[in-house]
Length: 314
Image 1 (cartoon, rainbow, N blue to C red):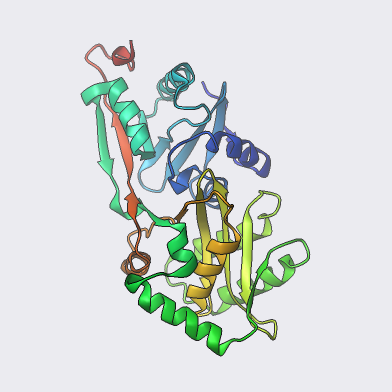
Image 2 (image 1 turned 60 degrees about the vertical axis):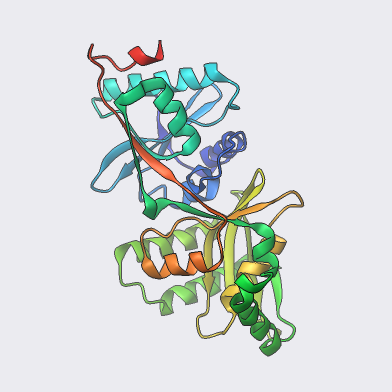
């Protein structure tokens, strides 16, 4: 049986090393996303050789494993060891062998292993939006005419505004902004209140977790927008993005500034996560012209004819 343990700052940092070895760009395989939602999904992690195995409880749907991460794709032996360990763990715990948030690369591996025993179901509501980083930095050309206009209005009406990185010195100001934002936000649904609380917690621990965070402030020091994210490989992931709605262009200002200042020189893409099926959020994320959606699948492994789990892997 795998030795699962809760996700803490220490285990999240160890997970970061495992995530860095993966070629897929799904937000579920990032330090910030795992840590932010660890309580909501009762997340736990076990380590199997070089591989990390995450487990999550989806409310109303049951317990799921996530696709193992940590070794390069060329290390077939490490993946085989991790998948076999998951099979054994599920059997010993008496739970279904099922996976959540599996990227396409993981689906291919599971289908190769299990054949038609693997039932793969895509979830559009959980698909991530992937953008060209340079598009979000400058809003170029006709497709971004509206975004560029909003940003230019913000800059015109707020001369002297600037982006400020969150450091130990500026963290209290960022925390005060997010707390004030939460007090005035319309959070009608439980999941919205959960997201807000977890965003505040993520900001509190952004520095120990090695995350990027920053805010846009006006010349008089008023913070109007904030973002939290991280860079893994060639992709900037944005976990939290908040802006004052009655300041025109504030959202475009933080989108652009965070894409400029949080990225590294070799960063090419930006993942702004999923829309969770919220129509307003979907329209907003589509309006920033994603280059693709990163599909994620729920994969259930049915029993084989001999009643074991692993005949197809021989």
